[in-house]
Length: 308
Image (tube, rainbow, N blue to C red; front, side, top):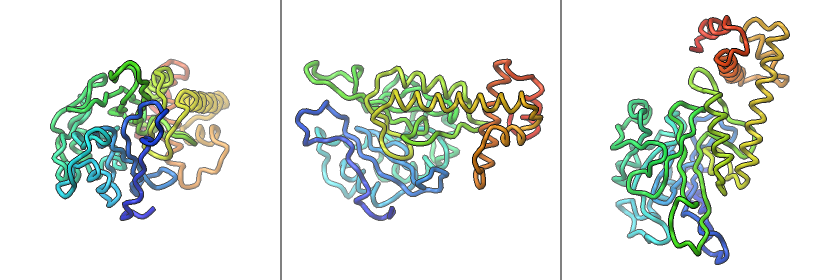
């Protein structure tokens, strides 16, 4: 994908379908960025009035923001079709999600919002202090977008919801519930939950909450939209439980250190990703130790490898 191609912005709602459920106005821009995601991009979204995860500044994202009437060079926004950018937030403060927060704050004058309790982490990663914070369950700045608690992949991870029964609006119209879910879920493959930041118990709990919440569509941080949220959450939960069984089997089979557990838990070639596999196994072992399902001596082994 070309970073300077304004055609890389995709409108995810369908204003021409008269029979559709009411869709939040969503634009997705695939932003090339230094990430370990397979396609080498992070999805930035303009979700109603909220810009989410501006990973880098590109012409395509500039165009999407300008279309909302927020760029100084843009024309007036069509408030009914495409609300202007009123706020900027990130799903979590990993480098492949925060790179252009400061740029777009300067461009739009929008309110910069961080998750409550994680403002310092946000500022250190984004290079700009937030104007305000938001707690799960609250709306973000002056938008109708709601913050949803989804820790696990990162301790500050939060998702952003629009539509659905909590969104209000005329009762005679149905509203699709959409969740911009960051690195909680992907349409294919799995999400890294890696020690020391990743918390598998929290991640599984987040997936269960989203699975049961009745969303119609998930908008992930990497890859295409997910139109079967409950099934995808179930698949990701089952994947983690299966990996946990592999970790337990490796330990029960005599693995005495993390490297041996990795060798026992993975059958595939780990060339180029062994460090990630090691951090993933460490997160699994940490969960198992906390739950009392493997001996406490593993906590010291985690610490010896820097996973504390």
